[in-house]
Length: 210
Image 1 (spheres, rainbow, N blue to C red):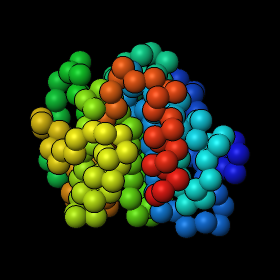
Image 2 (image 1 turned 90 degrees about the vertical axis):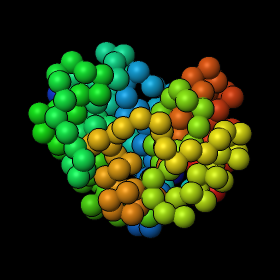
Image 3 (image 1 turned 45 degrees about the vertical axis):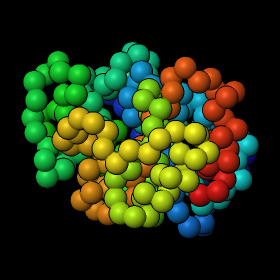
Image 4 (image 1 turned 135 degrees about the vertical axis):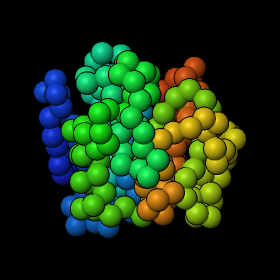
């Protein structure tokens, strides 16, 4: 894994491993998370490649938050819960089981959600980036610093910046940490037709400059 080492791990319902990588004794400036949704696997490919070749010692990297969902090729985890609706936001609402955006019987119920919350509590990153598909935009939650970071990333990717994803997101990661806790949250929505070979050079630059 190049300069990075395994710092923390946990097991999902299906006994798949969720892993956090970083460099010991370096300040955590940025946390980067791949595969919130199991049917959006490109984040794992990008981040695993960066773990082999990257040089930024101030990063914490979770290549795949939702390995169960990825194995099942579903948005949700093994409990059929959308992890990006499972955070204890002020606007969290219980929806119907089976909905694509079902957030669980209660907020913060999932192993994967708790894993990320524990990392943020322990390492206190100054900004967080999550990798999704397919909208080809860079979305941000937070203050002017979040907007500036989103603009710099969007310039490298040649994407538009959006401060609103266009639909309600109760229980979302961006709302909980960006809007309610003032940590700059950047959600990169990649073009699902772009390949790893096309995307990786851009991400190598993005991650190295953070």
